[in-house]
Length: 206
Image (cartoon, rainbow, N blue to C red; front, side, top):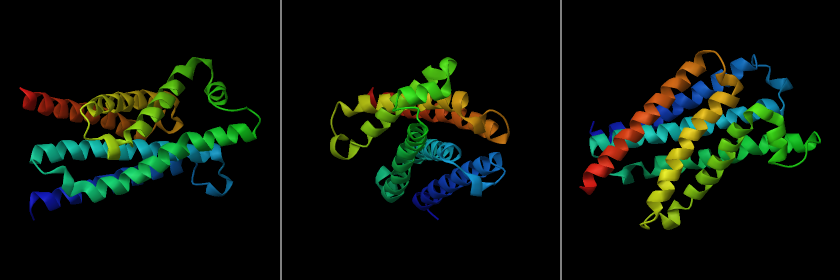
């Protein structure tokens, strides 16, 4: 089997694995009592889903660069998983904001900032800012070839780091248990993948 096919298998496999891990950790936290689930219980799953798949994108990209495979071979994978990410990053805050509004807490961002409490507001803002950056990144289909697009890429990388902090501080599923250890691995490997990508980029510019 050539390295192109191996990369495709790796990409789909790692994405499937991280999704399964996210669902298992989320379900365990609820003791699998899904019949009594509310929007407050459901919205964290979409956050776990979005970050897990975006992490997989970074890891797959680093492996692709290491193998010297053209990124076009992953077009179907990226488009399919990016759609899931897009839906998840809308659903994660959307479900929370909708439920807070139904419960009489008003509209965002005030409703969300009140929900997390005074000591954690900055981490909620991290999530809001990152959401805007991730949505801006979706414009890559039209502007990805522009010279200034690299700055959107830098912003997206920064947003990923902000989301790590956001998730560790606000994610109930990550406060203890085995997923916290997995998330630490995600964080460390994400930084390594970014470092590798930037080193390749800067070395090619010399």
